[in-house]
Image (cartoon, rainbow, N blue to C red; front, side):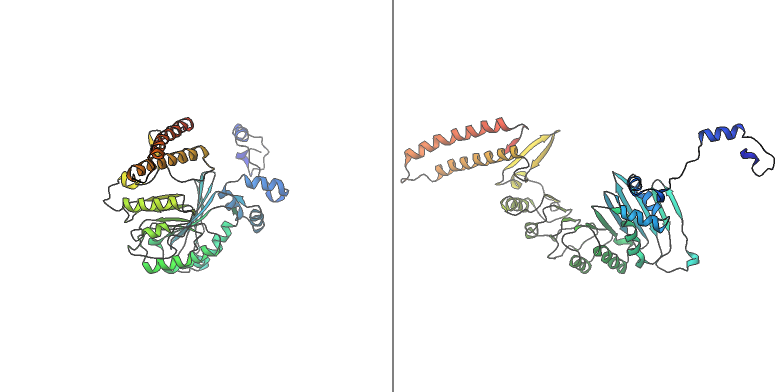
Length: 385
């Protein structure tokens, strides 16, 4: 029957419009996902986007149970909190999917509950009235759908009541949490002390909120990743105590070139694994002096795309060729120091024949080492000692 004659008792045939519509706009057939065998069903769910899995989990309890058992693999799961909203960011293959929850502090009658679902550029909005105590149930429902190697909780302190912060932090620490971030607003010395007492040192900690200038805590430099916007309270002993074998990033410090030189010498001679990368801002007004920074240090520098690259620490088996170059460079430095000492410690009791013989051997050894370095150097390094 023609689309225009629906409801008419007179038989009719499809018109030209109906024929064109059926050719170009064929109805999409839905897939009976619940009726499929286990293996095809898992293949289909693994090809879905994170927001599709979440939307599908709202259809029925049985569908949610199926999706929880299969768990979609994602790259990262970020939860951002304030006292007015929750934002969940799910990352898979470089693409982000966002889920927003907005809520009120006051409890509202069920008749006033407004539920709205919008899908706009992979962003999902839920305007819903509920208490902050329901956060745990919401979070557990969402995270149960995914298999994730990295979970990050972000707290916007300028939009977060203190009682909510403690409640959300307890929820985060009760489950799996790899990174905690505190943004905006200010954080008092008492609150910061309380947070560091609670947060385990295996967690990556990032604080970009305003921190007290004077602060001290035994765990401050023990976390897996350390990222502080304010670290003028940090001392050289704090830096030397780092053993997280990962990253330290300090946006503001009171260190100068002499302090960093002392730390680098300690780092080089330390038998324990300290850290992988250190990034810090020197004391305000400090002029960087490369001579002071590299005093009594052997630094390997090379240029890649006209930019200098400093290589300081790595495992010996990761770059064996470069490690051999450093060993030869260190040997050259030892020989040159030996020659200097011979000139300074010359005395009457010294066997001058042996000394002269050694004076002739040292330049030959140095020349031989330099030739070996030229043969092994495939990068065009510049050696500064």
